[in-house]
Length: 496
Image (cartoon, rainbow, N blue to C red; front, side, top):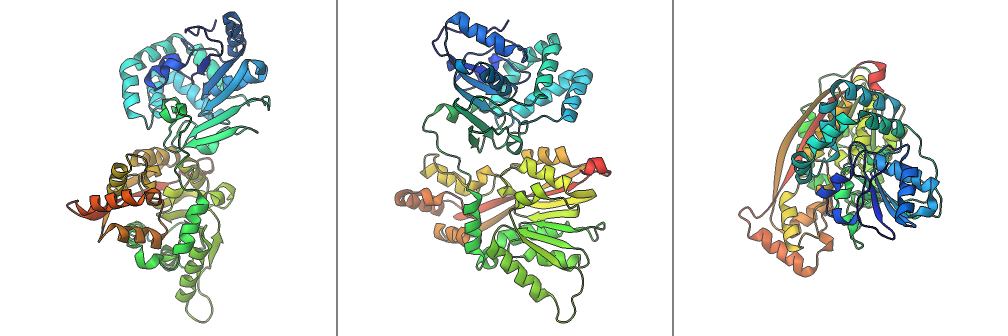
């Protein structure tokens, strides 16, 4: 029988935890006292009836229901069968579908090396919440491992439930779906989407979203990631000035060019985010006979790239393969792509992607067996000096957009999950500006805005300028450049 300890309440707030967890995990979060939750592992196939009976015995007409991961699917099942019992429903980190092969692999690891698998699983669940993960290891992990060993059937039942397709629920219910941009267990691109469900993506959130304090504040600010339309507008405006100011991007390109192999297997090349075509020109010169597909979502940038390639071609009959320019968002292109490429490459582009995990999976699927991914990616520690100054003068309310970029550990995990051979190297580039206004001009002329400076009041702007002026190295900022290489495994199944 379902056991949910806690005081009686007319409309209790109930939390249904994810696979392998129980209500004790709430003690790690900021709102542990406001939830009731199962005291141990539960059977997802009987949970709905048991929860309805529990509410009836307590005299509670309705409940406010929160479901995390597997618990979210159970919450949906309860809401479908007992809609009159649900006042509101929030779904945290719920994935739309779990492929049969993935579930089979989990079952196999549970049979062969359950403890090692569960430790790794718990670590992924807490990615992005280091302090809470350390507390979990110290206070709960051993108990959870013992619980799993004592009740392996409940873990298997949970996997069976994950294999089901969620059924529709009443359209009259107030349902909100919450997702973490950095969730590795239920990536944003694979999130459950239902008609009428209000969605919100937490830009810094991982899988363990119940640890996010902002969920419990009615006035929580909206996500800070710039919309792609805004990013596109900035790059459009900067197309004519980009080449004169993008020295950091040029240095990143030099790092990338040094890693290009002397030759590639037969097959086309794909360049993501070609910008004004500096890398496009280099690729055309290095591999003149290969078909090159270069795309960018900024029409103005793409026009500059076309002109570069046209001036590169000598007069007379065309020699070598053409460059196919496509004006499209890279993630949209990858989602619809059916062509296999010998190499997919990008300079300073992937950090802007909304769903890096999904993008890397689609890149792997778009590579020929043995194909190469080669990219420079600006990391989260870019512009750390500016971020420090902004946080200081805005009391933590304004931060740089780079805080939304992937960090090195996350990139390593994402790449390793998709590619047979992975190499990730870090470089630090610095640029000194004469003043804060010159730094702002750099952002404007390269289209790489999004630092949040426009949100500063004039007074705080002056504070930030003074803060930089008094630093030993003045207005110097650094850029974390992560050079990523991935080789697709051989064979049709591995490559696709």
